[in-house]
Image (cartoon, rainbow, N blue to C red; front, side, top):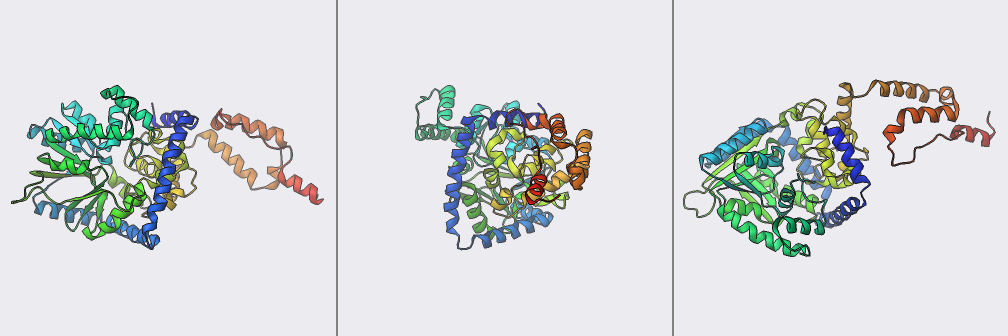
Length: 460
């Protein structure tokens, strides 16, 4: 199914699915309450957002400098850096590392970058088991579905849905509580951690001045994915750079507040190199795969490059009324919601593949309002729409209709011509299909507001 067809089909399915709407409303409602509470930790939240925005803007505008600085500092401490132009190159390099070390079992922590390159599917074809260890991601892996949300992968599932899934896959009772499922999964994962030959993580931030990989999480699975295996592989987009290690006090707290409503996440880890001489813990080898995969294409866009400043907190998804109703899978892309709509159109995807996503927005501005680093997402969506229309996205019929609409709206005499019968006929003829069959089709009143107003005022 083409992305546009998928979006329309999923939107039709989810918007009128009362169970889906109730689950999403409950989960997003809980999120909103926690975030409102989490924001109370700031004496001046607006100042924190302005500082974070400035630092992210600085990092993206000088990305070439910070990437080289990060690479030099990371290599100096014994790490290895791999530059990957696209998903194919990243997957191939990771598979080469694993095969060279004869590794057949890998544990993974949550990573949108590895979702982006479909690493699990690639490794499976290579005969390598890749296990998601984040509970939400593991639920989605068991279900055979991609993540529904960039922070909460299984947001669309209720606790009953999860219990049924674990019953089907692992024989656990359908009556199991979330606590019982979590306890079972923890025990199951521990054995996987011990046997894994390599651990793969993403990176929330890459600190240029110290060559550090910074990861924030709540389950400890990322830390476990690094603690046991002898090889640690990091997959991170080139947009993850921040200028300094010192900036983490700001970014860790903003990410946790806007991502989950916490003051700070439970586990915040900083990895700067493989195990050093005299150290007992840590991997023997550490690699960072710096992934482009279309980010340079976004960087080329003067207006839209601000999307690269995103810290992947998911706040814009939770704020978006469209996302809340159509759901994450409707977007047909790894990154969904407003930020995904901006990014996917500009990452060098096949021409027109994701152009429709920028029109899947009310332009209400809630996404921009909710962004911790002050990205004007609704403006970027408008830039995307402009670019799409310049490529000839509109049909000939649509262009003709807008021509007559504009002509009529510019002159009162033209607007009043034809009467309600003709206007209703034209609306039904050209817009009924677009309106859909789930809503009552609007009709033009027998008299316009202008006519009623003139009659009441006695104006001829």
